[in-house]
Image (cartoon, rainbow, N blue to C red; front, side, top):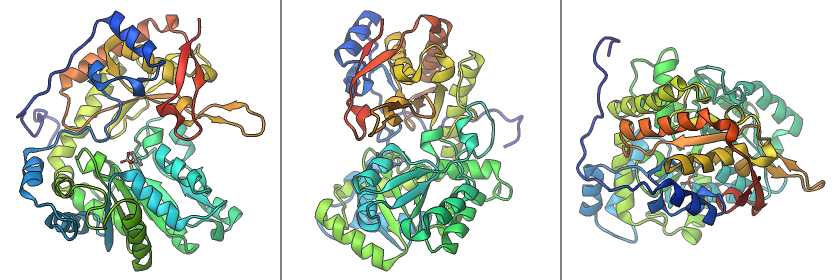
Length: 462
Ligand SMILES: *Cc1c(COP(=O)(O)O)cnc(C)c1O
């Protein structure tokens, strides 16, 4: 499409709607206090626009719903398993796949099988559940994103990349025997949903092969990443999303995948490998902890919905719409001077809370504070991706080590909200930015050790 043709609207129309309610401000203040200033503890019905996550919150298509009804339920060898197998072979191209109930179940099975105490698992940046599943299996997660990823103002096409030089140095330093696998997360969720280039995937694959280490891709947002490659990387403009995906996955030995993102379903996940030996191990463990390997802890209808969703997500018209909507939100925020991570990612716009609230130190959780204030201001729920999520307590000194970045993520559920909803979000945030000086930080009064941000409790500092 050339620059002059009119901007295309959503490639769908609306068949069913759901009512949403905005409580008065005083009630929102009361509600957030009641849940100790943690938006994870709010009831969804008390949220006006829910941008907490794009995970499991997609609107399914009529074709997906129809498939769920048409397919039959069977404990073993269901028809939907074969639909999904066909889609997986066609789009991902790995030799073996196992459905699981969500992405973290795939991570659990992968790490329980492949890692050992004190080993290292490098990634561009581990997602929180990936990190937790490695720690639970006594491994050491290592993040090797390029330095550029941590500069929120720097506009670069592939800020999600792994630093290939650092990776090779790391392997040499620790020895390949201590690294059972290398991962790459596409898009790189924890640094702002930033894409990874095909070239970077290739480089990582070459290094991994040189040292005999398998590469697994955390493929949660593979199609969004492939669309970025199509837009931004030399040589891909005339390829389809599916062709790009097939090439990308051909450089890996396997992948984990959360269907709750880009299978456009509300539940589901996948674990893939090219190794028969690994497949057998994965399958045996799946049967113990998830269910038989042709349903993996899901109802068969969920498999059918994933099979159809995977084709919808690699549809170019869908990706054009998806990326345009994220860019739309980013643009209004930018116009209101709100500091966002540039360029915006594939599934979300991230606000740089260090820049939004420079007067609040990391020990007072600026990103958490902003998330709470946004709810009070607008009834909008966002997610904290800062020190509540990634801050650590030093085991020896008991000292708090803040996260590198203090981000608030506005994740956009797929096909769920219109541009008008997003415009309201941006206008409320812009208003909040104008009175940012009046905002005070939070004190954390409780947090469990692993994935503590889900249940952490806070109180305001006066
Ligand atoms: C969501 C996500 C996961 C985990 O998937 P779940 O389905 O939520 O268990 C892993 N990695 C990344 C990058 C994710 O975004």
